[in-house]
Image (cartoon, rainbow, N blue to C red; front, top):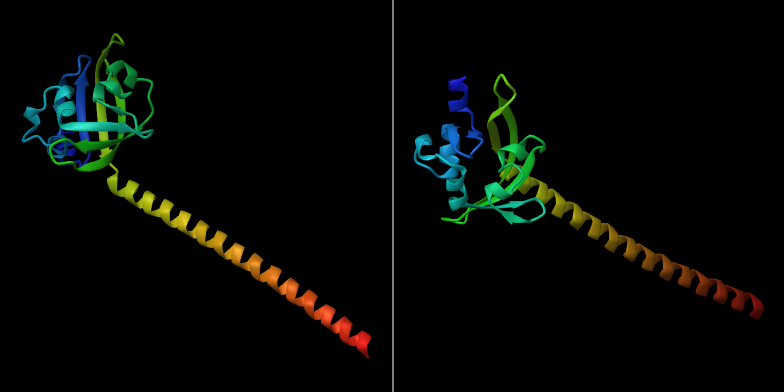
Length: 171
């Protein structure tokens, strides 16, 4: 399993119930800006390097996010968060999933957190949203233009009919 965790491109971190990082794969160290996995010892280190926003735009730190508290993780669905690196301003998005690990007595021992970088997916979604909005605007503009043309044609038909009646009355 260690081979899999070393080669996976997603962040994989195990936190004990006090927030200490007891495992981090190399992707976690690299993506989070640490030189080695042994440099990551507590989630607070990540707070010092990043600013986070949830999908509603609320700014917070890991312990303020729904998965920051190991116990809160147990009831939360996957969470999409935006990040910004404080040192270089780099921004992106993570899809964060987590799961508890219990001992034989049912006591929480740790939480496994997997964070997938979904920045490219979010960029594509935004492009699609903008494209759709542009298309809707074009359709609206064309609909307005067609209504004007229809109105003008009706007026022209009405005028021609009037002229035709006037000509028939003159005969």
